Image (cartoon, rainbow, N blue to C red):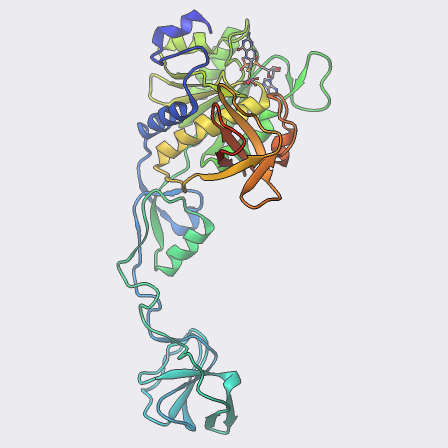
Length: 404
Ligand SMILES: Nc1nc2c(c(=O)[nH]1)N[C@H]1C(S)=C(S)[C@@H](COP(=O)(O)OP(=O)(O)OC[C@H]3O[C@@H](n4cnc5c(N)ncnc54)[C@H](O)[C@@H]3O)O[C@H]1N2
Ligand code: MOO
């Protein structure tokens, strides 16, 4: 690491950097310090945001007593005379008296006085008379008003990500808009003189693999990818590219490459020069230990990804994810914990990240494929990344970080 960078640095650093739980907590705290303001948004613009206020039911569900079946709402003993017809969108003309029936559609309001709904398959209809063909059905097939939810019920707490199901629930609850925190805008800078963006690289060149994976992962982690710029390796080019990226409205900056201590790694020096605070400078994890998190003088977080592509993904999962959670107030589900079977790292002194997929035995996962730091094959076959803590044995449960 370049000494110049320690000027503005406050991170406590040992050989490898901080441990994984500490890194994730520091990243979450840095994001939470930049909590985005809550804002009302129309429902159709809320997908992928995070609730900033609880979702409260605005009405009872169902809003009236309604039929759960296509059939006949009846009162008293049969046979019944059919006096009304209530299809979806309509309301009954009048209450039923004993011996009367109304034809009803599923979801339609039942007339006042309805005791039960007889499904169409359980009755015979003769002109305006309807009779039960068999014994009384065991169920009444009437959904009572407020049976599912009563007005004022808190359906979801602040912090819940707005999924497709949440949009549907919000609509059912009568909401036209939601108070949410938008996706933080994530600007990126990919560094490296050797990078090419098409074709098979010539000797000395490397095909950029992080640029193509970045938008999908940023999106998966709750951000909005807005810019992906490139810079060569010299210090001035890096500084100019970062300055111009910071002039955009990005809420978070991600860099790729230059996270290490090599001769062309000018990121630490630039961070030191501008007076950034280095919050995480290295994490005790394989792959991805040179990852870093800084807070820029204007308060924006910068996540530095190592150049090796799987190491870059490690940093996205361990640092960018928690930063974005902090900025949006997102509260994820409790971590899934499973047993990692097969050839797995065991008894290592630092945390290992292993791309995994569901194992054949229930409740297990197995390594998905080859996963060296510069290798994405296993990741492409994986549905999650397992976090294997230092010293973990083959029987231990491990946390899964889901992949898109
Ligand atoms: N003396 C040491 N050398 C290295 C160490 C170390 O501790 N001591 N750590 C190694 C580890 S681990 C990693 S990871 C890398 C980190 O490197 P940088 O973040 O400084 O990145 P670069 O040097 O620019 O690149 C490393 C490697 O990755 C390739 N790369 C970069 N960007 C991309 C991209 N967008 N797509 C595909 N591949 C990319 C680059 O060509 C290099 O091969 O440092 C190790 N060295
Ligand atoms: O972070 Mo590095 O890729 O572990 O090799």
